[in-house]
Length: 322
Ligand SMILES: [Zn+2]
Image 1 (tube, protein in one colour):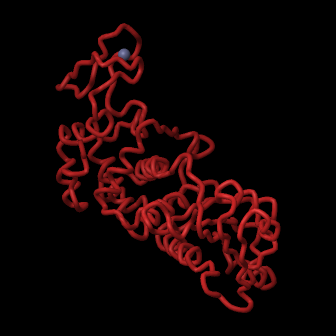
Image 2: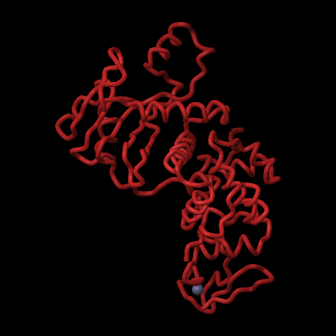
């Protein structure tokens, strides 16, 4: 059954629709168990539903016989009702330039801290697990994120402006496949330790099929890839485009990413950077999809993914105010 058919089409519709807890539950159950509910512990289909408590009970004998639709998903252990989760997912998925935890907190009436935690769980669902390799025409490029240029001495500032980065900047590498499975370009971005040859070339080898056309700028770190790829270089000191040899797709993505980080996320701790990268990549890669379709796609991905507070922050501490 195609469950995308009855999906609300706008944020306002979604909030109204999912405000009914039975509708939220039915929606989640249909997506998660399209062929009927199975027990997450033993896999049995002999389960009964306690409608007054919106819980299922497995008829086999084992611990944790009672379970909710949230078990084994990013919603597990969360006291937040599904309608708020769904509305938050919708807000994140449909916001073209990102949305802050303050906006989500106001929108669904939870504290900023709660909204922050929910958003990180949702970003986890947006991460794509194992990818197929990019092929055909692929652009590779890097950029730096972060830093506080105005607080630095002039020399250091000049270093940053010339693109040599700095200690408080995070290096990010990106790959763009010009013609992805849906005919449109798609990206993959990653926070990397540095721009050294070993780092960048191993990323290319891991994510791009050998024999692909590879376009990069003149950074020497890409020099040794010419044996495995049809590698062509555009030297930005000379020009930005030479026929199909350019990295303009990747440049376009960097400007979207930086606008999002600057405009919405006041500061991004390096530790959390990958989550924002994933969110922006997800938004870019699904840019041709309707909001409702993207929402269902994200919701499908929440099953089987869990994240604890500790794994989010690296320790038991208060979240950053982003
Ligand atoms: Zn069971």
